[in-house]
Length: 434
Image (tube, rainbow, N blue to C red; front, side, top):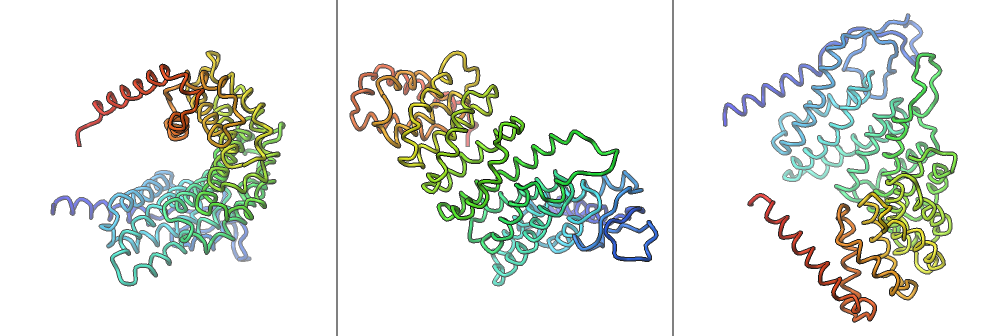
């Protein structure tokens, strides 16, 4: 045990030393108010994050830069996996990560943004046993959230901003709405800036040597931004409605026919999860969203079809009577997804989930004599197990209510549940012993 502790102590010491290495020199300081600067300036990890100007055209020892990024990543991993045992190193690590979140190079900033979430996890474990723990935990959360919110609108690297958005979404899921409520106004404002494509990282570069094709980073960024809305909805429930009202139109801009296929995928998936989390208030958006989702059921892209099937199901589940007029068009759009021409099992599973939600929401609007034979042939689910609850709850409810249409299909049902039992038994056999 003593030897293991010595190894850990050495690892921490080496990581701290690497984080504090001298970086070399840099030129062309951006937005400096110092009139005496002649184009050259030392770059140090001691610079305060977000308060000092970052630099461009950097002359730096590449090995040092890589080492500093790797050391920053290591500190985050140490904190994440040792949790309360990380207590002796928490304060110094926090100082380093705050500095590195405003570092001049995006590789180091990215690792700092990731590691800050890990430090938050470790701090939560450390402080929960202390009398002044809640106050310390709140102070740490204040620091981390302040950095993330500033990064969302002020950082000029899309991958760094995307990671900040993902970290915020994870914090909401881990700690709930009560923890992030003090920051909601700023978070919503920052999200709106990103949806309007007005943040620092979304501005066009003037440099002639910049890459023209930034599609991959755009997709990564907007996927992360769109994940914030479902996180808001899940943590706030129906109380998210007034906030969503301000975000809806900027989001729908990405669903226009002129936008790339990936943008429409992002919008449909986002709206499905918002409907799932927000519940009944989604009814006010059905007439805008449902035609889009129905159209995407016929997309050439499997991910689009999968998301669209999930979306129409969640809209029917939560949208109330405003969805009934679309039932016929939805069923016609879903029908090809059950056929042999559909090559993707996940698409078929989500189509089954959509039908199940429609039946549960309003059984009289679904012609069960036509739908059930097709529906049951798609079972058991093969890839997207998250649809299991909706699908098998629907089947069970119909059976327990002695629905005549499903009772006529008892042989198929027996075969279906026999397959499910066999699958479960096989899975249990393959699981390692506890």
